Structures are given as C-alpha cells and as structure tokens.
Image (cartoon, rainbow, N blue to C red):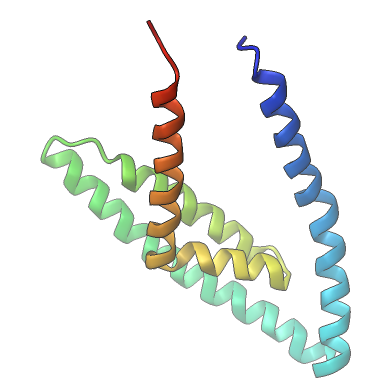
Length: 137
C-alpha cells in the first residue's frame, strides 16, 4: 500500500461520520421545524412529491446519458464522461428517495445538467492534477 493510504482513509471516515450521523440529526430537526410551520400533512406530501419528481428526472436524465454512452461506444470512443455522469445521476436518485430536505437538495443539484457538468469538470481537473504530480517511473 501507498504511505498516504492512512491519510486518505482518515478523511473518508470523517465524511462517513458526517453523512451517517450528523446529516440524519439535521434532517430530523429540519423536518420537525418545517412541520411545525407548514403542517405535518403538507410536509409529508412535499417529501412524496420530491420523490416522485426525482424518480421522473432520474429516469429521464439516466436514459439520456445511456443513449449518449451508446453513441460513443458505436463510434469507437470510451464513454468516460457518461459513466461518471451515470454515477452522479444514480447517486442523486438515491438522495431524492431518502426523505429529507438536505438530501433532496443534493439530489436535485446532481440532476441539473449544468451543475453536474460543473462538478464533473472541477473534479476531473483536480484528479488529473493529482495524477500528473505522481511519478510512475
């Protein structure tokens, strides 16, 4: 293993802690606050509405990405961007199905093509810079 493996593992465990422990507490407190303001029935129907809209957008964006990947395969190119977009779209769909306002926001951000392209380009630029700094000889 690489010497930096333990460093990356520590960062990963911090994000897992944030996601699995902190986010549910924030979601529950936000759910209680919103249900006190607008009512429980409207809050639950809002969750149901975002799940239905999320599934619709997930299907639409997922099929569009699948067709673009298929076209690239037919012309002999590697559909790398489409594969990463498929991962982002499926993750966004999972976030939309999970009840909560924060997870719904994250899910909708992942389904907007302009924002998805922005995150894709910023992540890949960081990835390529990190791999260019390593010497593989």
